Image (cartoon, one colour):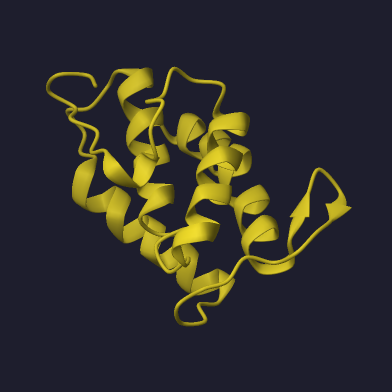
Length: 118
């Protein structure tokens, strides 16, 4: 489980923070995303850990459940303070790097339920 959490961190967190705070996507510099209030990278990661801690426990063993909960937690930690139009950009970005079966709509409009696996 620890190896999976490290892999998920490496897959989502640095890329998300680069996109949000610097506008960097795949090494290309773009426009940084607008936040309602400025949040530092370390505070985003602390919030991610808090959200993950509240949703994941040792009983969650399914890799897909863990990754989908991780994606949901990224939305509501790393992307929580984004303004509406930039939430759409972050949603598109997350779906692209996730390569998972995710809802067609905005991820901000969904909740991942571990018990029903969707």
